[in-house]
Every structure is written in structure tokens, then in C-alpha cells.
Image (cartoon, rainbow, N blue to C red; front, side):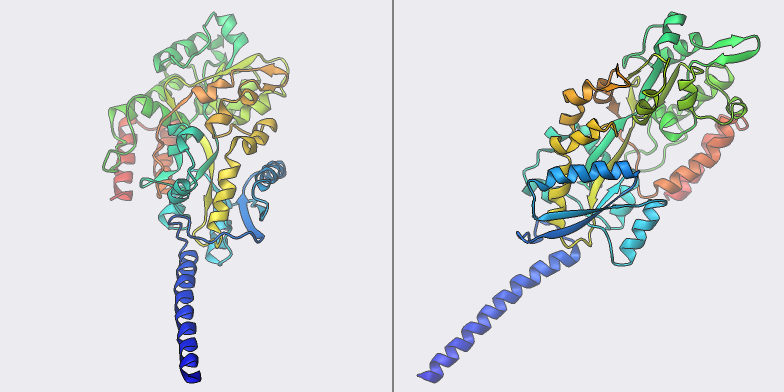
Length: 433
């Protein structure tokens, strides 16, 4: 009888051990592989320490820490250490990943697809579904899609300010030009720029518009024309009428109509960018991002406002992602989801740091009615903007080098449009073959 009982007890222990081993093996496998299928990473009530990497200033870090304190109220067991990465952010973060000491949460911008293509960050779709997060309520479709790759969502958009049109109201009034609206077209932009350009003899002392050669400025014109940089099969489409028309307009504004400063004129002014020239009253309009609001708020004697861009434009954004190597993916998702809720987005607004990404924050009274330098401006311009689907891809940096190397001579008026677009098309065909 004792032998029988002993045998039965041994068998029961073996069965329990096997069952425990199966369950433990699945959980460990999920954590090691970075799987987020249905949120499998185990969550406990024990304290969990996470690391979040970001770029920016010390004040940006303080705002993030303030926001994390708000998230901690509903997730008291999750502690997040904020690591401010100075210098080459991507290189240093890649070193952390390669060295086996990756952060759990990473701030990433346009090159998130590089990380996604290398499977260094995970898609968030299963976490979004299992947590019943309503993405339609949290984001406008165009902002949500900014961090989509191969049909999956790889980041929770945190900040996403559209490029808007800054204009000098006094210069518009003096020239008798109606203030810009989102119903403008490229033609109306050019006509207004002509009227806002002032010459003294042969010298231009005030320009109507400063577009610059930065990719957001010329690329938005391409998409406004109904063009794109890739077709439905992801083949480059640079040598098209839509791209040619966009580039020709910018060149004409500088060298044909004189409504924009040429590269030589910019050099003569000390290679000063558009923002300071606008603040000095030397240009009547410029297209740029949220950051210029804080700068202009400190400038006395300038009467300015902002308007949505005519047609489609792009957004300057960053999002919060989760690394595949993180051992606490579900806790990390709770953090990035919490950071994109309205209460945790409010410090972004209150500090004047940037335009928040979420729909509730962008349309909140706190953002829309914010004053800068004691001045009420049209902050609704950000939520009123329409964004095109930026052609982000894992070879973004290589793509932009091909384009910029050939566009530079064109914007100096030292290369023809035909040669420029053909050479860029050839370079992109080779890159994406």
C-alpha cells in the first residue's frame, strides 16, 4: 500500500512539473522573442523598472518626467527612468541595442521604419486591441498613419505639429493683401508673394515668401499637385510632371519672379535661416513648424499669425515605441498609452513645448486658446491642417542623400530641371531596384 501511494505521489509530481514547465516555457519564449501576441508578457503587481530614451533639452526631459508622474498614478508599480541621449541619438541607441542593454521605450521620428524593418521595435496592434484603445478617438487618421509600416502600427504618436504658414499681418495690411487661408492654392501663394515683395532700386529689401530647399517645403508641393515619390508598387516616381511643376515653382519664385531670396542673397545675409528673417520683417511669409511660435513670442514689434497650409502638408512628429528586447512589453505599452492620454499630454501644451499628437489635446481649449507672448494666435491651424502620407521607408536617409545631392545645384540655379529630375530618378531606381 505504501509503495502504491508512493508511486502515485511521484507520478503526480511529474505531471505537475511537466505542466508547469510547459507554461513557463511559453512565457519565457514570448519574452525572449519580443512577442506581443495578445499581450502575453506577464504583468505582476511587483515593481517594474523601465528605461525610456529621448532626445531634446533638460527642460524637455523635465516635461517628460512630469508626464510620467501622471501615468504613474494609475500604474504605481511601473517606474520609468528617462535617459536623455545627447548627440547622435540613433547611433547611440543602436549601440545600446547591439550591446544587449536596450531601452524598453524609445522616442523615434521619421526613421522608425528602419527600426521596424530590422525588427528592433514591435508592432503594437495586439496591445491596442487587447486594451480596447480606440485609435480613431485618440488620433486623426492622417496622424495615426504617420507610424504605420506594412499595415501595422509601430508607435503611439506623441507630438505631431503640422507645418503651418507664418505671416506678417502688418506687411499684408500695408500691401493690401488678404490674409492667407487653407483654401489658398499655389497660384494664390505666388500672387500674394509678388505683392508682398518690395524693392528699393535694384535691391530687394523684403521678400514675399521664403520656401527654402528643405525637403518638407518642396515635398508638400509635390503632393499638393497630386504627385508622390512612389507608386502603388513602391517604385520611385520622381521624374513626373507633378514633381517637375513643384520644383519649377520654387526655382521661379527665386530666379524668375524674385519673390523669394536666392541662395546667393541668403549667403549675403550671412546664411540666416527663414525664422530670423521673418522675425526681422524681411520676409512676409514662411512655412515652418511649431518651434517658431516660442521664438516669435519673445520678439517685440512684430504682428504675426499662422494659417493652415494651402492643400496638404507634412507633420514634424515623434512617437513612442517598444523595443523587441524589452522584458516588460506590456508594462511599456501601459506607459506609452498613458502618455498619449489627454491628462498626460497637457504638460506639452502648458510648457509650450510642441503641438501634441492626439485629437483631444490638439482640439482642447488649453491648446486652441493658448497665448504666446500675451498674444492670441490661430492655434486651430494645426488641427485644421491636412497631412499627406509621407513616403517614409527603411532607406529614407539614403533616399534623401540621392535627392539632396542633385537638388542642391538646381536650387543654386546651376542645373536644369530636366537633368535634375532624370538624375534623381536614375539614382532612386538604383537604390530601390
